[in-house]
Image (cartoon, rainbow, N blue to C red; front, side):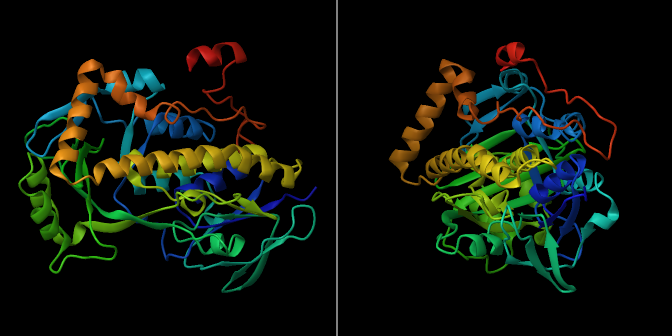
Length: 415
């Protein structure tokens, strides 16, 4: 039999994970990336245990776990510095079966790209869907600057404002503005150590998290009109909004380069798609289920998508049935995560003094009753496990047994 060909449009986290997983299961893969290089947009990414277990399937889980930097206590604070809730890295790892890992997005992209031959990734290659194909008949067709390309499977990993989603589901309204904007920055670690934290204010949020390489990844969010930008620069905007918050927030802002602060409005799709596939074409990641970053699950869900997709479309199986099974697996789960992230973002956007006081009181009370109450926010999300694979490492590497595979008996006990 000829090796089936998959074309992935978009070279971000979801697209590259799908390419690696499909190649390991026997597909010939090509990634078409519009940008001229694979340098990712974005400073950092948080990978929870659910994504780490998905990465076990392609041999990257342990490498990612080794990059965990959070040790000891952390939690949520008020702008004045008062701790609203505390939790512990060991407690989180015990509850969900692994650490929370924050890393530079470029590090993850590099690790994923290393699992592909150089010829599999074409940068500077904008592509568009011409024909989604039919699962049991004609191939899908992609338009490229070099002419049309046929494929047995096309994967749309082209992000929040996905053009492929619009072709597959033209009647869907797509993502809408979530009501707030975000900033991200990487700086050297300050001289004074601090506990990792998220600080919640009135319609605003700040997070300071250490990376394994010694730098600090900081992120902020605030209610703002869509499309608004600072009249001077975004570091100055951060100083105006967060400069009087507790340390290390002002120090981190002061250490940032004025041009090194990334700002992006947040869009989400609380109205789910009717399916994640049509014909021979399928969507993963933000193209399928754009979500607010308030749970830190956007990249994690894209990784899950890619691994589950590869599980269901192994060469030699019925592609139509496999894509339908992928939609059946992923649509309910990602819809639930999108909506939960939206609920959390509504709490962050509270700005009235009474509503903020009530929110902070509830957080503080829940923490005193037990740190497990705070961690329960991620129950059903961070404790996810990949499906039992239909392949073991695939045709391009020596067969392996991923560490997460357990027997039916002890799998339930482990969870």
